[in-house]
Image (tube, rainbow over all chains, first blue to last red):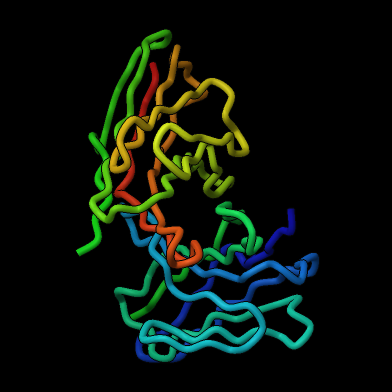
Length: 110
Length: 114
């Protein structure tokens, strides 16, 4: 299974953009890139996903490198409520299975 | 609002006990999953089910079994609990109709085996 690598932790100031990187150099052509986040004392929640093109939704943007070996989750204006562990996950299109990494703990400073 | 509920937030059991963790979803989802979450290891898939009475092993099924008699309910069973099964257990569900894009997670059950 392809793996993802993320920094253990990052810090951001409130109301500033945050760029959370993820490396997935062994990604296959049929792997989707998903991002989830886990707020304290809660289960993970879906943030965004993509295959090849950049994606935007109300929560975030996903920028995918042209060679697909890396991606970046962009939070446009971090708030204190965005403090969470962010997981970058690969999923083969044909399976139900997510491969979770250990995630990046984002700390947002007031 | 989409909802996945788990029977307990916290559970303490003794070594050797049989333990049942229950998960219920109200979204009519076909797929349900059990994960365990341990510090430094992320989430690891134990079992999943893509239909009633259907199940498949995940990455770490040893010491666990599952039951899905009704579409909305997925149970994780620890036949004989051991201390190395102390962990956070998370249940999730997803719809096959959306192409598995999104898994909805419950709040988790923190199990301590003493």
